[in-house]
Amino acid sequence: MNLISNKLYPQGAPRNFLRQKSNRKEIQLMSKIISSFSKMWLKVKNLESSLFPQLQEQLGVLSTKEQRLVKILDFAEIEKNITVISITNIPKDREQIARAFIAESVYNMQTTRDLIDRLRICEQRSER
Image 1 (cartoon, rainbow, N blue to C red):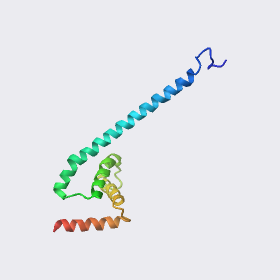
Image 2: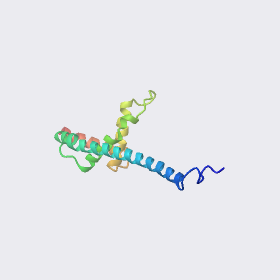
Image 3: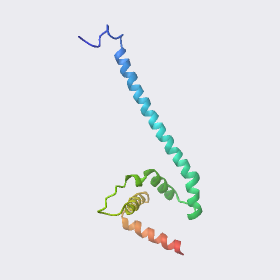
Image 4: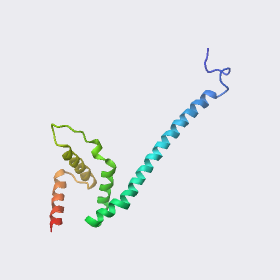
């Protein structure tokens, strides 16, 4: 016996049911996406209204790349993704190394040596 017959379901009912179920899933997904975007937008606004002014007080005006680096590091939340293994580098070193890789990318540096040299130059300037 055909389970989907006109006797058991009015015409088009199974298709409508599946369509409604699909629509519910899409609505739930969209709701999650909107919630995530809202949280990210609040995070950006918080950075711009509280963290950037504090950084500018201490460091002076931040360049566009410096602001971009701060935003990326804040969103990446590297600390949550670092695993602790006692055989290799300590976790604090791993966080710094991961941040350095992100900085290399933001500043479009070809090698880690370029980043180290740039950091040394900045450190020397700040000591003056």
